[in-house]
Image (cartoon, rainbow, N blue to C red; front, top):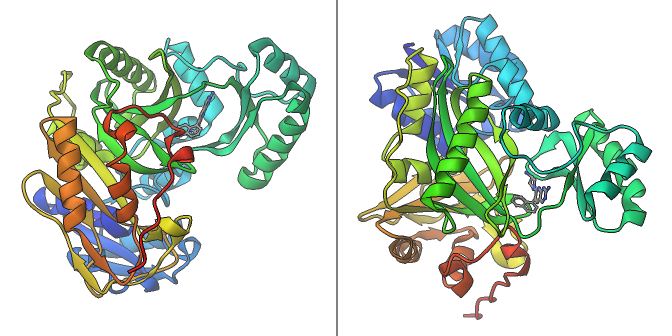
Length: 449
Ligand code: MV4
């Protein structure tokens, strides 16, 4: 591997380019016409324009990305997250063109993309899963019988969905059939696949995920957990490692389960095994993400490693040594989005007039933004990730507050004021929250100047 094409944009494209250059690898950026002025274009050794602003005409165009790799002689492609990162066809097409796809095999991506099959795969090797239907259910009467057996509330989930897409909660048994039919119709419209499965609803759950790395040659290791319960409409806003509820014993059991699941598919690359954890610390497999995630830096900080370097090394064919990864300290990431938290998080694209990033000990900022940068309206609203690391959770929260206070972004609205209020909340500070926390968290309106 000598030259890596980055099939992405924004902070993650920069993040990938940095590791490639440290490893002595050349880089190729691809960009849409909306990203001509973007930093990933400037930081890469070469750059190829792949189309107009809409993602479907540029960052999602497999043919143009492969052509860009061929004309520049790139021998590997890193997909980042989003866009084509979990597209099994893309992984297969790269391989067909003798280009190394930095990620899992097409078979693994497709298997984990089918949420019902992924769940069955995990259950078969003894990973705890949420009680529910054995695979997908088509027949409404059979579905109703199963739901009655499990007891309400239940959730109906689209097999082709994930991340909260195509999910329905049903409390009232009398409304089950209506929801079941609607869920199938919706899934068909959204994913071209009506298949749904049914689960018992886990109340007051936390979302805790385990970072894994496999070499595709039989070895998988884990890097501990990330606490991801602070979400709004299935969009994470803050992540941390370790989870405030974690114990060494629970980490050992969840880590072992994640490894067992990943080993059963001879997993290759970085991956994340998502679990729901209930109030009694029972854990249940939910989904596996076959990509590097937005929140990977909190793991890098507590494990003191470069996960992207590991992704690239295993894609080059290196094996990994079975070992317990040493975790130390506490890391928190705040997602800084170009959104107005006081106007229902509505997008706030536009030109950044002033931009000053915080610094100092234990502070990391992953961003593609700069003073004068015009945020295009076509893509994700995340413009920076602010990551801090300290010896304890309390010290990390204090450091994050200091860093947020230093962060200056003018010209657009951002989620910085949201994070400042969240970090002051006594329940957040006490580590007492679950996935419903933001449903009831009310922002204090700023006082008019
Ligand atoms: C659940 C659940 C409770 N019980 N499944 C939402 C995202 C998708 N990955 C699955 N999700 C959930 N599945 C059962 N059986 C609650 C959620 C859920 C959730 C999960 C993680 C983080 C935030 C969430 C917010 C609402 C619901």
